[in-house]
Length: 398
Image (cartoon, rainbow, N blue to C red; front, side, top):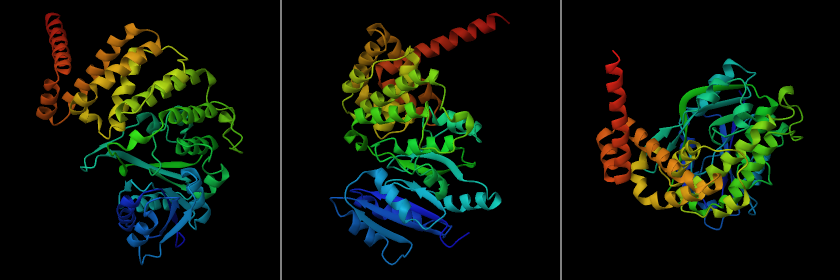
């Protein structure tokens, strides 16, 4: 490998508080053939000075200043300045395991034709607790990510390294997108057919911070994300040499349900963040039939993330979010087809929370949290009664 094998691109806007941690996570890498390009995207705090203090004396770091232009332009600026054959995109508030680059280098040395190496990842609380993300469908589709990425994005921006040449081939980051620009790049890489390998271990960590999502414009989140998946289901001239089977994109027959899923996800995130969401429901009518269970699952998985919590925190999160969740369930029921769907959605969500809580190893803690909520306690009793009834039936049939 060359002296600089990996160029790490760090877009930073008003990220002074994260300068020291992100510099530390790179300096801890056991593989030393990397450089880091910090792009200060028009910060109004002392981001530039904080980074310069943090990496003072280390020539592997460079700082580039530019007027506020957005994260896509910042990353493209970093790519243009990169010297390495491989790129890694690291947001200032995330971290990676000290062995990530070394493990990726081992993969590439074993197979020089590889163009994309991804790893397992986890969501991490400020306390240091973390929860690995499991995406079995993506793991099974190791040689072909496009069918999965055409409908959802299970890979974080810092969960992979990729050859700089293939990123340039598909045009880099789309500067028209305010959000979902990372997903959009992954879709194009997958459509092009990058040769990839997976490292199963959890080596990338996405930090959850309470309140960070509350500043997001969820209407724009929904609109940009829908634009990404709509292009994924059609021809995309930005990919000059797509895999033949994906030249026309994913099957258009699946698009309506995917678009509805994005609305559900955006609303659930807004609920968790304590942000408005009615404009999302007003702007994007339901396009396909939806079950109460599908709506409940979206709330179950997304509300905690936007609230800066893990799924295991639901029993403790519930007292603070139940009123907003109830209001959202009522609005989603009407959006999905009728107010009568509200009760089934609520019951399904409560079942998911209780079942997940009682599966956790901290049984006493989660059980006590569930029992402190009358609604969750009633659901737990109902589930227990149902199990008991099924047990009696099975025994009577012996």
